[in-house]
Structures are given as C-alpha cells and as structure tokens.
Image 1 (cartoon, rainbow, N blue to C red):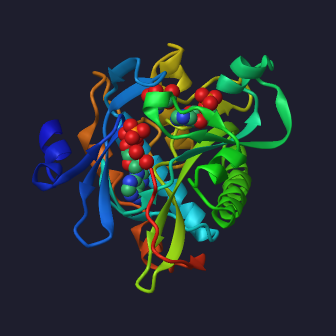
Image 2 (cartoon, helix red, strand yellow; image 1 turned 180 degrees about the vertical axis):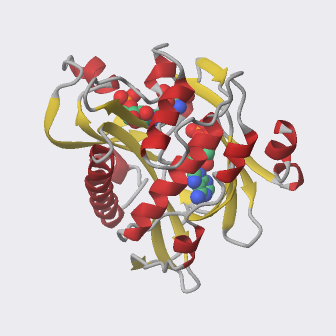
Length: 295
Ligand code: ADP
Ligand code: AIR
Ligand code: ASP
C-alpha cells in the first residue's frame, strides 16, 4: 500500500533534479515543477544520512501550510497547490544561489563560529547569507560578495532582505502562538520571468523543520532537524509535534503503533488549503531584460 501511494504519480514524471531531501519533476504546465518530498535526511553536507519514514509527508504538509499563510500576508511564493501527501505543484524558478538565514536566538553554526552561548537571544534578528554550493560547503558570505559576483543585484537584495524580515515577523507570531520558539531558519529565493520579461522574485524551496530550528517554549526541547543532526531523539516525533500544534495532523499523529506510516491519515493531509492558493495574484518586482542565473 505504502509504495503504491508513494510512487503513484512520480513513476510517470520526468525527473529534472534529485537533491538531498526532494526530487524536482517536470510540472503539468509550462513554468511549473513538482516538488516530491523524500524521507531522506542528511546533515553536515550529507556526511550523515538516513531515511526516516514519514518525514517527507510531514515536511510537504508543513511547508504547504506555511507558504499558503505567507501568500496570505502578501509574500510571493512559488507554491501553487498540494498534489498529494508527498508532492506539491510549484512555479519553476531560477534559484538564486543563496541560503538566507534569519536568526532570533543563537544556535548552530553561529555558536560554533563566534563562541556565543546557545540560547542567547539576539538583540535584533540577524540576517546572514551563505553561498549555496555543496562542493564548497555553503560558505558564509557578505552582501558585498553577492554583488561582486553578481549572484543578485542591489534591488533584489533589498527585496530579499525585506521578505526575510517579514517572513520572520510572521513566523515568530505563528510559532509563539503554539508554544514554540523560532530560533532560526533558512530561506531560498528564485527568479521567474513573466510574459513581458517582468521579474518576479519568489520565495522558493520549503519551510519546514528541516530548515527551521524550533524549540518548545517552556522546556527548550528541540523539535527540528537538530534531533537528527545531533542524535537528540526521534525526528518524526518532533516534526509531528510541530504539525499537530499547527493543527495539521490529528493528535494521535501520523505513525501507527508499529512505527509505520499510517497511510490513511497521511492521505488525508492532502486535503489542504488549495482553495486559498487559487485566489492568488502575482506582483512583478521590476521590468528587466532576461538574465538567467550566471552560476
Ligand atoms: P539540495 O539541492 O540542497 O540537495 P533538495 O533536496 O531540497 O536540496 O532539492 C530541491 C532543489 O530544488 C533545491 O536545490 C532547491 O534550490 C530547488 N528548488 C526549490 N524550489 C524550486 C523551484 N520552485 N523551481 C526550481 N527549483 C527549485
Ligand atoms: N539550514 C541551513 N542550511 C541548511 C539548513 N537546513 C538551516 C538550519 C537552521 C538555519 O539554517 O536548519 O535552521 C541555520 O543553520 P546553521 O547550521 O547555519 O546554524
Ligand atoms: N541539509 C544540509 C546537509 O545535508 C545541511 C543541514 O541541514 O545540516 O548537509
């Protein structure tokens, strides 16, 4: 049953790219692609790997929900609609090779790099940029590197930083309302050109516990991918806690008592905010001559 449901549609699709956590397939209409969420987990530039049943389903659902909410407050995203429990239809973009990290509380590489104690509240949200290149280990870069190498222009950087702040404001409210601290997160953005060569800058990729640090507000228990990175406990348990507090899965969770994915519950998660998504309109950020990613 599981393999039928999981492979149902992907079998017929043309694979465009396979990454560490997702597969990108050709979409049904021009300008679209399908994101398939795998159960694969990697950390430390894929030096640590595992397959964790249920992770893909949860990330697909959580990301669809958050992207839809962000669209609702006027942040343009690539998300079009959910297709099934592991797949979503998104607008195809040229991904800007940047990982934009926003931090509210010190954790992870910030602590390692600067010796700051984990859990220190930052005096203001900190926006960092990393050059998205696995071979180089996604190095930390400055805005000047981005402009010097033409990975984005000043206008795009202004938009990116402004969107990152707005996403942070919104998600801080969303998560604090359900007893979670938003420690930090990573965003990716992409370019899409319209019929008249107008440029749309869209929030792309995913927003899920794979790329957000989320701690329980009372206990500071880590509920995100750090569980996997540092062997802190069952990953799916943490992701399920987040999803159920967001009201996305029933209390009992997604896994059956035998530790397997409950296909029936998982299939119900497909039934989501697609109505809202249909009402969306895109706003171009500027007219520009066609210029594709240089890297
Ligand atoms: P990685 O490439 O880092 O291993 P994933 O396994 O998550 O990451 O693969 C998904 C890939 O698809 C990422 O490289 C991401 O930048 C890219 N991507 C995300 N959204 C879109 C989109 N809307 N159009 C095209 N590519 C996208
Ligand atoms: N992130 C960065 N690269 C990949 C991911 N997923 C996310 C982490 C964390 C934030 O960016 O999940 O939420 C900062 O990561 P780090 O390792 O720089 O502290
Ligand atoms: N996803 C990245 C990796 O596989 C980084 C991380 O999440 O730790 O290495």
